[in-house]
Length: 247
Image 1 (tube, rainbow, N blue to C red):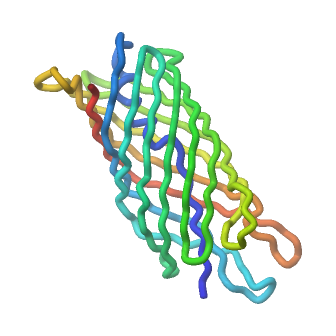
Image 2: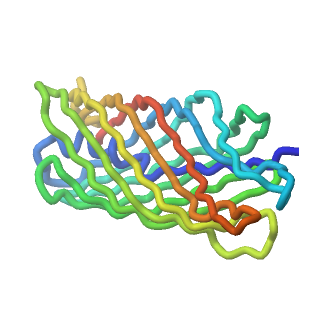
């Protein structure tokens, strides 16, 4: 029986979309609140553990079909300070080897605009992964930078980069996988800011389209019979579409 563990990584899901409009705008006085959602067409390549001859396990790669995931986002901005909260709702998925599981995530980020159109962030990332046999809950801090550049009128270019470390908590139960991991995130896209027609409740609408790549490398995910260690690599990538309403 296959025993596959999905390794998924991402960080700051709400930061790039949440900052695309505010960073492109001139710094405003007062509090801005933005609420929206992003649709991410995720394509997965990950690794798993399968029966072998000795020591009865082998590290293999597997992939899954593309799947749309909706990510709700809430962000705040006051002067040069901003923050965002986003979630990856519990979502079932399958891989080509026939295994299945559920995954959920949460991201909390705070940041500061060091220059118009350029912000630095510190975030906290948590992943909850449930497989058929195993489960894991890596979490940790993320450092990031996000920026925008005006293209023409309400159209702007945005980009985001994040790096961090994740660690699973200590747990004696055998089904709980324990590992340390490094990961990186890159995203680029375009944003279109449209002032609200009534201008009363909603100040503006922001639409985004981009491409996102996230890679997590789990250290020493497998040790061979000869004592050699192997890292497990998980890659998640795909196009994103988003909409934000700023109040």
